[in-house]
Amino acid sequence: MHSVENIRLKKIRYNLRTVLRLAFDEKLKSFNEEISKVQGIESLDYLEKEVALRKIFKRKEDLIIRKQRSPINCVVCGERMEDLFYISSNASWRCILCYRDWISESVHEKIIS
Image 1 (tube, one colour):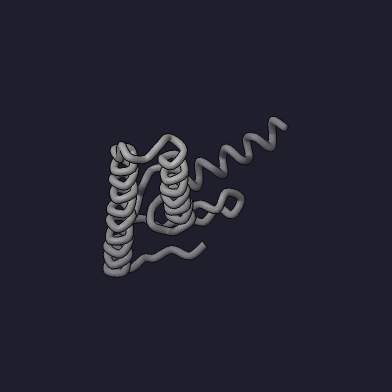
Image 2: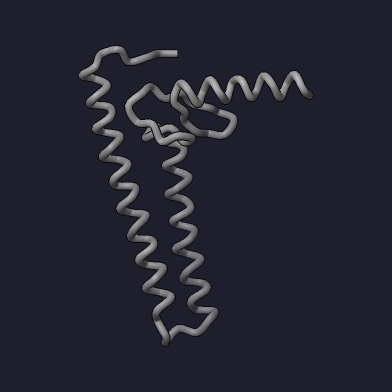
């Protein structure tokens, strides 16, 4: 595992992750606004609303999955400053503390099995 030691590089990485996180939050907000807008359209019947909402929910779900699979922040605690480690079994990124917890849980599960 490779760790970033340079404090300036850590700050740059943190700022980049913050920008990406803010972009994600903004897009999520726009999906929620789209959902509210569709729900408020009285001229659409139930089936038309259902189809429109499913499309929005699918795009929203895809965005959330892409975020979880990107090294923006720890999927467990939200940490953005520290190094993140990739967990291939569930395609997610975790900080060192959550990674260690995950390793401990995995070892514990293997012992019990």
